[in-house]
Amino acid sequence: MELVECVVVGAGVVGLAIARRLALAGREVVLVETANAIGTGTSSRNSEVIHAGIYYPQGSLMARSCVAGRRALYAYCRKKGIAHSACGKLIVACDEDEVQKLGVIAQRAALNGVHDLRQLTAAEAKAMEPALHCHGALLSPSTGIIDSHGYMLALQGDFEAAGGVIAFETPVLEVRAGFEITTGGPAPCELRSKAFINAAGLEAPALARRIAGLAPELVPREYFAKGSYFTIPGRAPFSRLIYPVPVAGGLGVHLTLDLAGQARFGPDVEWVDEINYRVDPGRATGFCAAIRRYWPDLPDAMLTPAYAGIRPKIVPPAVAVQDFVIQGPDAHGLPGLVNLFGIESPGLTASLALADVVLEMLG
Image 1 (cartoon, rainbow, N blue to C red):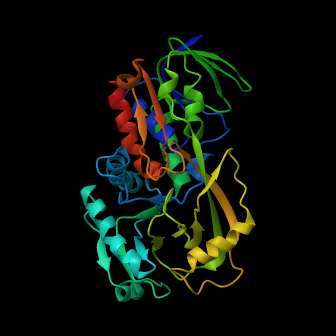
Image 2: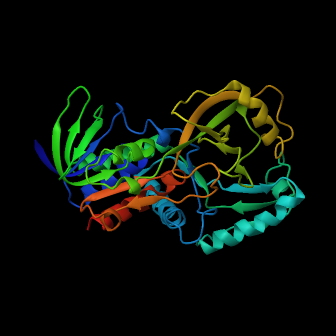
Image 3: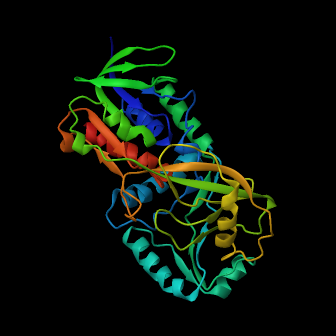
């Protein structure tokens, strides 16, 4: 049995950020991943947006880590030369009833430390984006987009340069007392670790149930909120991200751009019982209706299925809001164990800040 100081499970963006942070702090770290590459799950199946920190409840870990993480992420991108753009976004009221909601969103953003939002009239918004239909909007200049894979590669590079080791195709089968770990895959092994960080994303609750000594009632039930994305050929007539007023379970069918200017639309919200990433072409009808609320000139039959992602929810569909949960020894009484549950959007934006939280928990 090989003795290591820290084992981090999950080589998504958050697991990579945590492993990097621990390695840079001088810890001996092994990062284990079930897949054969970094970021194959939620981390590569999202909108690649750098969020400002607008929507989340005041004082929540989501709000605090998003605002701190966004500042750290922009600085990291500049330092490492990671492709990104602070293109800004418009949150749009598609009817008169939604105009009042813009004020509520702006108030919540200010409570979270986001003070750069500007409320626009319909005419001001249309002057910025002539193809847009709305009754008013909020401009968020600090929202941006990022090459998420380039970011993860940079995190991996920092981690490995600091002496960290990644073991791919290495699922964790069992975690016994004292963090004695049995792994599977092509090269199964036995590890013993002083610290065990569960950053397994969608699989985090299932992994936590395999940790000896962790009280079952401390492990939340997982719920899967699938979000599909569609795209169109050519360029959409927008230079900023366009978001409708949020809906229960997500931020609505929004328009985002990749760094080449290609538009993609989504995600919608579909509660599913198992992980599958197939995009049903039939959902295009609902997408068209949602998109035409803010882009009425969307041409017919233009939407093409792109990809899907799944949010790792830990609250049922009837509960509109959840927070990140980082569960350390103070919660469960097991020194060295940190579980991360429900790390959905804005997890990518918050990743560097969440890594700092984990380091502090481990002491």
